[in-house]
Image (cartoon, rainbow, N blue to C red; front, top):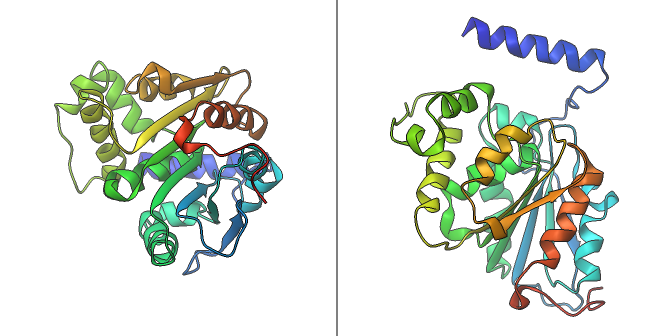
Length: 261
């Protein structure tokens, strides 16, 4: 426990000194959320796309970096909700509850039937935590430069010889990382059978600082679901991967170019 606290303290001090500390935003209920419509008409689209930001990011970063406009350009009809799912919700282990109660349940009450989750960095972690716990609600997941888990989790997976052997060892439900262990077990079990919803797309930059651990995660997914781009752990790289993922969608998930608002 002392080692964990010391590691967190060192991380916070380093972040402050480099000007990269996560903003101290309040964990309000419900979460502050951007609501973007990428299809015309008064009727609410049945497809809901929820975008989850990274550690240092805000909902506005998805708009600024072209994630929403890319949907419009491809005529993909959807309602896009971008919650301010910042680190405070992960630290309190309430991010999945807030996504469910503040985003998914109200949207389903308004007619949403097909749900896509898009997560960059820490948002990829949030997408996996939520999807493992609420699998019937999610049809597609887009993991872009995802943060795959804590050093402790990844070290255990590597030391066991990979995800398959590690999954046979089990884990303690009271462990602080139990929800991360849970989605890794889920990914291992999915990799052993035919793919079914939620369909997962995974992508990372060739110089992403988490790439070695991300590749362990990607190895559990079909080759056709994996994407690469030149670049690191940043929005420019993530945008390139997002465009690849959208262009690779099956025809029934796409619209007509220029059909968006």
